[in-house]
Image (cartoon, rainbow, N blue to C red; front, side, top):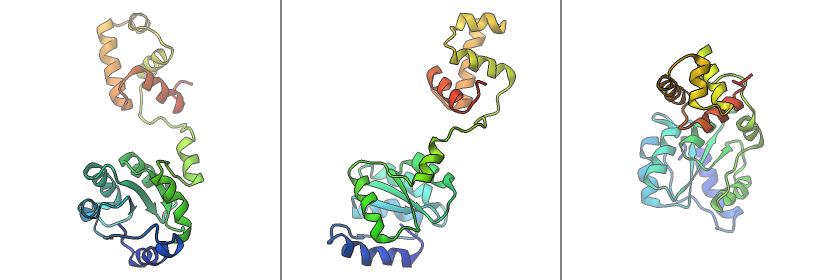
Length: 201
């Protein structure tokens, strides 16, 4: 799914030639809202999705394909160097990301790797994913930071209640609120997020 006809045409011509007809384009659309329906109809092994298609956009297309045809492998593509859309696409269910600056012939090895079950990212995007962010993902007040430090240290609800001079019930309520704020489901994930984001210093 791409809104640049020349790029799609290049793939249609070059993929069969460079792969001894192992790879070919079986369908294309520039309409993000029609992408999932087209994938359901064509049932390809793999779908390439341009993240910069017109609204509702490539991210929504990735999510829709993932919902309707979960067995199809999805690869996001973009001509932008901004890692944020690529990360959004991975969260939406894409198995890989490739820059649109790639030559069609150079796409085959990563595409075959994705079909074999691998996730594929350019090195610079992988570094961006793995680089610890020093900025807090959420804005925590002093009490929430104290609570998070206590959770990360493995302190019990009773100990935390004593330290914060509140009831155990209040600690449980505060912990539930903190987990929601951090978008995690348990204390271990909260501790991991805190350490990764540098919230414990």
